[in-house]
Image (tube, rainbow, N blue to C red; front, side, top):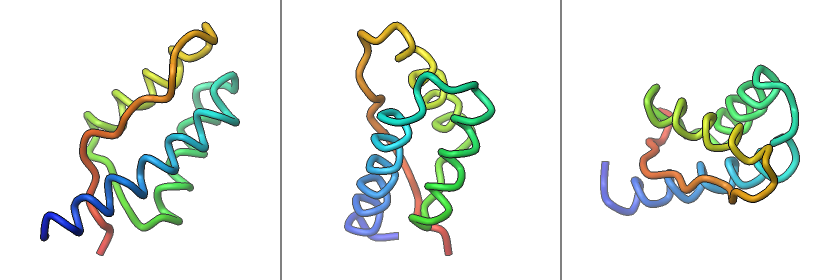
Length: 79
């Protein structure tokens, strides 16, 4: 995978995370996870298990309404 492909995957995943964070942060954890997974599938990118867990925990932390959407650190294109 080239650096450009890696960067494009991270950017696509970040858009999904931003959208889920904006609209679903107060939802139940299962709903947030489902929306994240569906968005990533549509964007044709994936997060490894650790990154997915970190992002979901950060979105859950937004329920205090003082946190910002988490930043995606790594994502890969789905082949």
